[in-house]
Image (cartoon, rainbow, N blue to C red):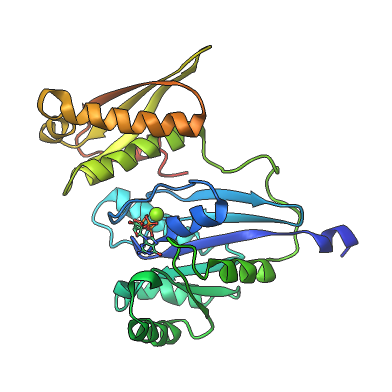
Length: 298
Ligand SMILES: Nc1nc2c(ncn2[C@@H]2O[C@H](COP(=O)(O)OP(=O)(O)OP(=O)(O)O)[C@@H](O)[C@H]2O)c(=O)[nH]1
Ligand SMILES: [Mg+2]
């Protein structure tokens, strides 16, 4: 190996775990950017999203994944496939859990993860809201599930213990040339991040099955001199959900549009005109062609 090859480290650090344990919060903290949307609801992340953290001596390719779900529809089948795909190309695996996770295990996933010959870092998150004895019990439980894992206790939200975890990631990262150009931050497009911001606001403003019946697609993205015009479609499963999204006298969708526009303007750094159009697309979650069009097979 040449001197240059030995001086640069790069690799895929794939983050997996059950829904809602704080995977996206952790990755955003490491990236110092909002790569993935975060909400208190389960199954917020639906895609595999790569974030590139490039410094003088290293490039970490962080990979966020959906929480490991028990699929009830084709969309969730795709989400589970993303979780499993993170086991295929990982150089380092971060399995994130929180205390409520104890007992909630996909044995097939754990078995596959244990069969990998890569560093496995088991992250117990949300220690800011847990008692010491709960954390101890969780450690015993997870050490049995992952006998070779190194265990880290962190609060992704408060940034506690995350520096130590980051240092360990750097230590175990392999020597390799960078995978992506240094000025790139993610494999996903601006359009994708815009649709995610809108979906985040839908998860935060609507209840029960509504956020899980929704898909957001950017149909038009035009950068004009003083404003960027973004036209989007919000797909729902049923007419009744369309009415809920719009709300009485359009009040709900107006609030949604205002919240989303503010964040999109911050993200793009320009003034934005945002149009939201709600459309019923029956059975989209189970239709392979539609899911393909929505990017769930990439
Ligand atoms: N108290 C506390 N809450 C946290 C911590 N980390 C994340 N959370 C919260 O947990 C919730 C879920 O966080 P996410 O980062 O979206 O979790 P996720 O694992 O990506 O979830 P999915 O995408 O649904 O699989 C949010 O409300 C976060 O604010 C933590 O360290 N402490
Ligand atoms: Mg997430």
